View 1: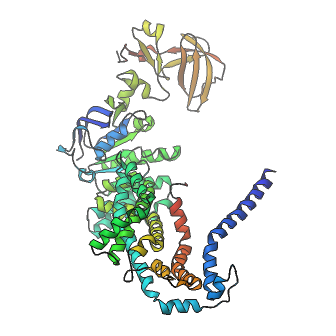
View 2 (view 1 turned 120 degrees about the vertical axis):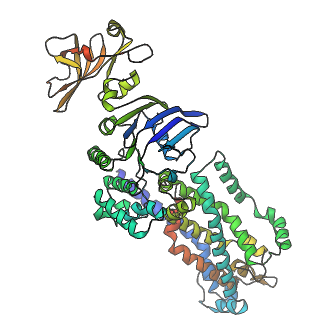
View 3 (view 1 turned 90 degrees about the vertical axis):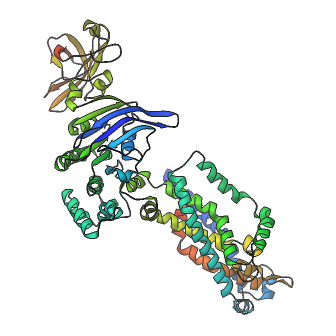
Length: 274
Length: 332
């Protein structure tokens, strides 16, 4: 009897999981559908059947150059991720293998900055960017994206590093490895899965970041998020074109996420599930 | 050369004083075993010698040189860890070669040394494998190989066999002892297994709460324990410790009798008791007895002694082999 109940539960749980997954995915699906509609169709009301036109994609590409914001997104996402890893790997190493009484507090404090509403520091940061000439520059935005994602990167790497037995690093020390040799030859290769999933997640977060990218850029360094926002103009909203632009903006990250989903799930659940 | 001298070495973790103050001399080429119950500070002491922990006070000398403030790699020691601590992302060959690469030894010399170590440890066929593809015993041999190639002045072993099953433990025990005979290098070995301590050591250091209770050869400790702690710790089954009237009649607070120092009989003897458990090993028989007026007694006799649960038997302690201890627990 117990077995039958388990199977029933399994079926119900599977259906529920698919339903939830579909609900989460639905906005993306509807964006794609809308991008294939004409503008009158798009504002006509709810409909899941588009006329199948690709005109919006052509218009979006001719009106606003897609390649430039796309390249900016790549530069900002990759650049801020590399910078974050360079800072976070030694930081997480120190916290994981040489903890002090205050390590947990420092981690919590770092994470707490993520709980602060970004708009609270918009004015001082905007003024600083203006005064240092960083507005609408790649370097300024790369630093900004690095800083806002750094707490999560440090936290994830810290969780990973803590799973590496300290004895292995001690063995490296006995074998004559200095601090950097220990990090480069032993710790980093062992933490590759963790570093890879941290890298992927950070690229996704940086790619999707819109609050700062929209407010601190105009044209030169504007990434795809700003590209989408530009379709909300004073002349009105162009739903179909906005959807086409959104689809083009999310497509690269969606494809990256699809191919790396296994790695991402492993990375995010590491330490929590053993 | 590989003499190690500890001079008033102490270690505290915050408020907790793990090792109050230890003086110890380890002679070049000796096989020294640190033994003691869990938490007695034996692993901490080994880590202090290795340089993986900083001393809170005192000096550590290796070959007459003060190495107290030296980094682990600068002490010329090699360590084998309980968990093997192999580099999982490297092949066996690269694991063994790692310390040589760190020392910037040239490639030809590295290859030669790795090949030699692999031959000594029967690892030649496994050089290209990853540690995860090896058995526990093979992994431990790789760890030893990694230690050998450095040609250290002394080897440090931190409970290296405790993750292995009983049969493999016996084999590896023998291999490490043979390796010591072959290399004649100082070895410091930490274990809580007294069979390892008794069979491998030239010298045993018995530790308790961070203090050395006694230092001596295995048989010295077995035959002449300095105090009740050593008497109870060394020997398996444990020494019987008897107080009250019998001890007083022998002019002591406590009397210790090894399980094999009884004469067992079915007909007559000084004491009589009931067999609670009889363990028949073929070569020996271990009897756990409830002796009238004395209490629990472990007795051992050579070969088979046909006793079963509930049997009444007689036993007489061998008076010439008694160990007597005073009020402070020290041997008289």
